[in-house]
Image (cartoon, rainbow over all chains, first blue to last red; front, side, top):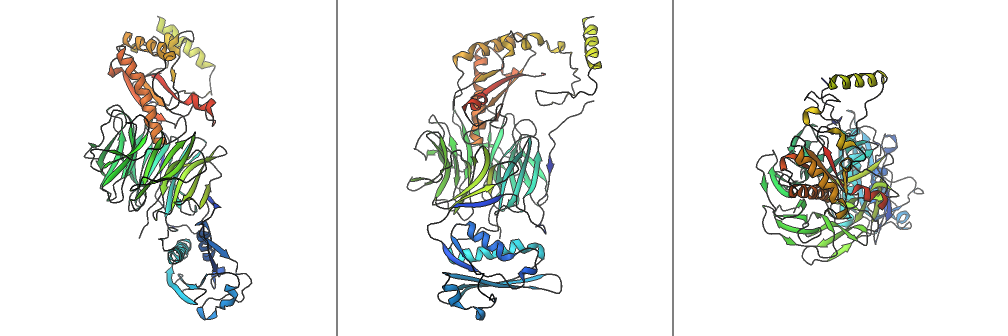
Length: 426
Length: 167
């Protein structure tokens, strides 16, 4: 008997932070914010004995946000690690508005004590000071937490440096669903397959990813637990199953099925039971996305002739049209505050990320790349991650919600697509 | 008698093929039905017609304009020919695979591919083919035939393919 030759797939659990991290995606800034806060980050005492620099990661995080300018502290000797050691004129003469100092102390049990302070350079006061006791494997994660505190104190927004991003990497004929740190480091493969994978979607608590896999030769929706690596098939109905979207409370998902012929939106319970049809238009309804309060679903519909963005109650019902610019507006995704949504607008053959304010209907096109897809908000609503193509290669990019900060995230070994920014995890 | 001769021919071919990999055009399916590579008589497929390059039935692809899913006039004879074949061979069935070019949303392209497959199905229904002989699936933009990034490749990917089950 020949037996079944199935697509070779492997499912893997997400591992705890590795001792030696490497970059999967390299991120470069190609546009910065309107104003940049000059911050001086002084190397922490004893951090040069560690396998991983803390201030290197903190500085890279802040620089990558496009909102900070790094002030060079090389000539300041000895480098201060306590507030009383700071000679403020040294820093003010270099233009610094804020100073970061700190120290690392190895403990007898092998742990590390990391403490840092954020100082206001003009007022000579402390803005923040924290101390952490960590295992050496948590150095990068701790640096991200420090960067979050600095970012929050100086910009007023929640920091997202400790979050994760999911995306699909295609190398030759091989597809991998990967989860990496938001800075592109430590990518881990949670699914590898010889068939396409699309539409990853994070549960609100960050523990699960729903996605679409073609491994059974047609699209089906799966939900995978990132901690255990286990997964279950959520939707494998007749026809195509795709576009999973989580309700914020995690109890249900919306999906798109063609079991009645054309693509329509359905909801089902997280265990796969309780199938309910939500839309009934004669053409295409797809790409559902729940509002953060769980009350609404925005989606793409052809019902007026070409694809436009509509909104309906999360339990289904009458839909109202939201987009009116041009003939192709797709992939709507709510901002975390629910007041606007990102989407892809086609205009003159160019596909761009745009944001629309729900109350006013005002639209701002944010990108000047030309083949954009799959916008995904950072959980603080400040950046939008998306897929695009640069010189024929699939690349990720990010743009700030005001269009000014621009990043490119490149993976040299293949094409990257379908990004999804993970939630803030307490 | 004919079957015996056919088997002999197959054996003869195989003898010269030691060490050659079997190349599949289509994805490999579970063959628990006990299929042999030559014996398709049971399904009454009349394999010659479907694969004769001089016969319109060997053409399997309907191409579409950008963003469109309606079957253009130039492809109607093709769809009619396959519809006629299917009504004449009740044991035969097809999967209609819809595809889209790479531009724009993957999920929307999955839906667009589905609409292209459904358009061909509707035309076949009108010509008398039963639903039970047709399945429609979409690959969206995920299985492109041509992978460059301009219209010369995009036009090849905006297509619905007619694939006979058992091929």
